Length: 337
Image (cartoon, rainbow, N blue to C red; front, side):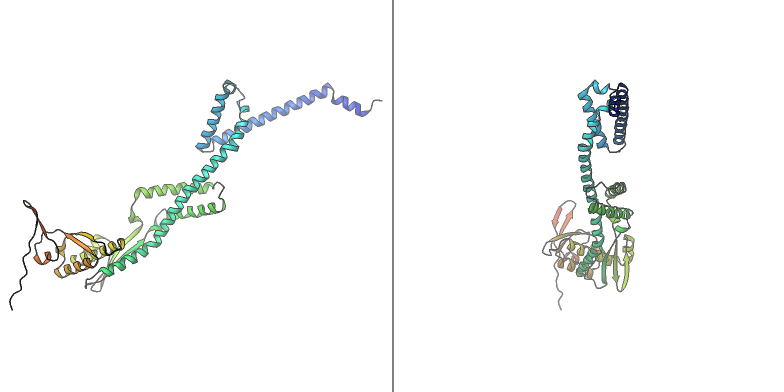
């Protein structure tokens, strides 16, 4: 009797056994080829569908370089996919990480700028009231008109009322969370969409470039105890007499001027018009206000009133034929007792 182990070894080495093994190996190989082919197709489809132009262009460039190197061996091969696995490995291990890092850096840069813009607006929102108080204080210091006991400028922030404020604030909140927690991870699609919307908003704001959208401006003038709130030229025209309104505006401009130029030793020059709307007493007060602020008035007007002209240090007249010449004012003589 032949031992069972010898019969088993003979069976394993028989032609039938070898044929069966070969058939199984071929089937496994075909399945593996189909699996690899399907994987390559899915990978290429995923690259194309990624929506990232840089990623897609990089892959196409690598495939074109491979085709250029292999020639017909690649272009005419019905199974061209078999050349692509090493290329995909290089693409996934080298190209994708570098593109990913570049994308993260870009997102950090753009998001950081949007965040700075938001915080700048937030700071401006807090500062508008402070500037309003500072300028109003400077106006009070410069004003010297008995009938006007109070002239204030009021700035009210409109920043948080802007239609984009809520969306920009929401983006910055998501941005800060991503920057803190997922510094080396790509942001969510929601954050990317919010960033895109914020960029569109900022471009519209820049193209408009209208500071009036950021704050409201009004004046408060108290004349002889009566308070008038002024928000337009028409309000100003009807708030008081033309002369007192003119003086109030001069007081406001003096305050703003010295808010911008703190050094009172600096000589400043103002071109002033329409002095004839102010009576003589208040013109003297206007000159006093300007002298204390070290502001030199340059005015041109048709009046030849000597009392008014004497308030100026220099006097010139523009003659149609003679040009510019010095004006000689009549001397003031005292009448005998």
